[in-house]
Each structure stands twice: as structure tokens, then as C-alpha cells.
Length: 235
Ligand SMILES: Nc1nc2c(ncn2[C@@H]2O[C@H](COP(=O)(O)OP(=O)(O)O)[C@@H](O)[C@H]2O)c(=O)[nH]1
Ligand SMILES: [Mg+2]
Image 1 (cartoon, rainbow, N blue to C red):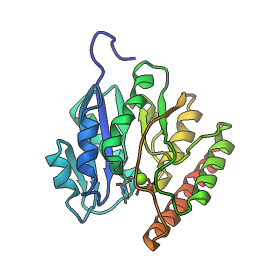
Image 2 (image 1 turned 90 degrees about the vertical axis):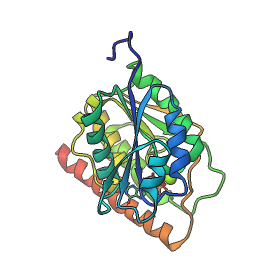
Image 3 (image 1 turned 135 degrees about the horizontal axis):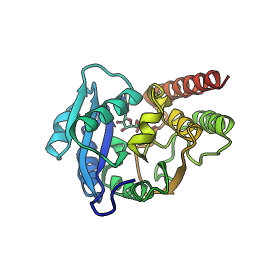
């Protein structure tokens, strides 16, 4: 538990791929969250100016030369933080939240106050209608429930705050888009507490473009693999 006499140290980690249009606003908003000491953007092999824009906005940037997926990017971000400062809380923020990223501040308090080992953001209905995702959300939600007995409201929500101790206890992370489901299952199975927190967040909604369908297929594959690995581990 952090020393109550000194301010908490919060490190924000933003996995990002080709987010030049949004990353600037997201970084500036994240820097305004109370007790944030650093915003680390992990540029996962972007082909646009994500890294430059993030740096100009005040982030520290670490890069993967090749795309390695969200799970690996989160891992790289935490390793970068560990080399530079002793954080009390790791806050994962998606790159596409822009100004609304400030609302992830609500995730930090329960972790700093030791009321939760991990918090997960619950988003309000988004202003644009999505193009499906029911399949992946159902697979993920039912999988978490089967593995833990706990029913997540939004099983794929990426905005999370976690203690470094809980993060260290759940290695290795699931790959790619399986990372959220894997984290939830592994943190709960380690006997730690997970708490959902409503946050007024707004992100890019995945639509019906072929690129979006591909994103969904990759999500389905990674969530399925994360769940399968955890079914095996239990036996
Ligand atoms: N590390 C990594 N992050 C990615 C990749 N693709 C997207 N992201 C980031 O992961 C987060 C969530 O991606 P997004 O496309 O918004 O997915 P959705 O919110 O699940 O529809 C954003 O911060 C993206 O920039 C990738 O290939 N690797
Ligand atoms: Mg998004």
C-alpha cells in the first residue's frame, strides 16, 4: 500500500497503432489526470506519425519496429515504466479516447486507496452505432464467467488501472486482443479484487468496413486462444 504521506505515482500506458489523428488529444488529456507522473505511448509498428505526435503532446514514446499486438505493447509499456520510476498504479488507456481520456481518472482512486487490485472502465452507450461485435463480446463475457464465476459488464474494455504487484502476478499476459480477458481471469484467479467503474469515455466505434470485420475476426481469435489457454491451465 502506498505511503499516505506522499502523493501517489501513476503511470499511464497507451498502446497505439496508427493513431496520429487521435493520440495528441489522448496524451494531453491523460497528462491532466491527478498524480500522473508519466504517459508512455507504445507505438506498435505504426506507419503514420503516431510517435512524433505523441512526443509533441508530452508523452514518452517507446516503439516496436514491427507490429506485435496489444498484449505485447502493454508489456513493453510496463517494462519501460519499471526502468524509469516506481509507480503505485499502472493505468492503461486506449489511444482513440481523445479528450475523454481524462475520465479514466476515476479508475485510479480505488487502486490507490487499496479498495481494488484492478479497476475496469464501463463505458456509456457510444454516439455512433457499432457494426456488430456481439459475437466477440459474448464469447469474452461467457468465457470470463465460466472461468471465474464473475460476470463482466464489458469484458473487452481496455481502460484499466492495476497495481504493479497484481500485474506482475499474472504473467505472461495473453497475446494480442486476448489481453483484457486474460487479465480479468488471471487477476481474479490470483485471489485479487476487480472492480468496475463507470467512466464517461468515447472512442472510435468499429463499424462494418472490411477492415473493421478483420479487426473483429482477430479479436475473436485472440479471445478464444486466451480462454482456451486458461481452460487448460486449470486442469
Ligand atoms: N499494440 C497495439 N495496439 C493496437 C493495435 N491496433 C490497435 N491498437 C490500439 O489498441 C487500442 C484499441 O484499439 P481499437 O481499434 O480502438 O479497438 P476497439 O476499441 O476494441 O474497437 C487503441 O489504443 C489502438 O490504438 C495493434 O496492432 N497493436
Ligand atoms: Mg477503441
